[in-house]
Length: 153
Figure (spheres, helix red, strand yellow):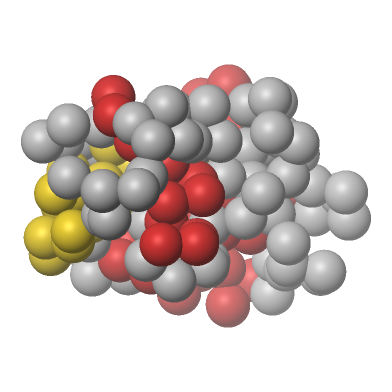
């Protein structure tokens, strides 16, 4: 099985069941460990990646359903204009506290800027609602998104 991840083709071994969640293939087969396991039921957002530019929960998406779609993980999002802006804003605002959820947060925030370049508070709240942060850095997350949106690409 071939997967296009972060712009590069990767071969996944024949021993990988197509019903295996993409999260485990990324982490265990390809050593892309930035995407985190949180809940396993697509409720927390820690495992968010982009598939053909859309944010998806990799704990529930099977590798067999990825097919020829392009996957972008936290390891590759900084190579995109909005991903780089979000990552820089995250650092500037000092968003992370424990940091565990941040990969998923950044992936969702980047998807938001890709679809809505000048998001309102309501847009931000709606886009980020599926990403939980146990440290409750939501105010800093919103500020970082606003700061990134204010910067030209």
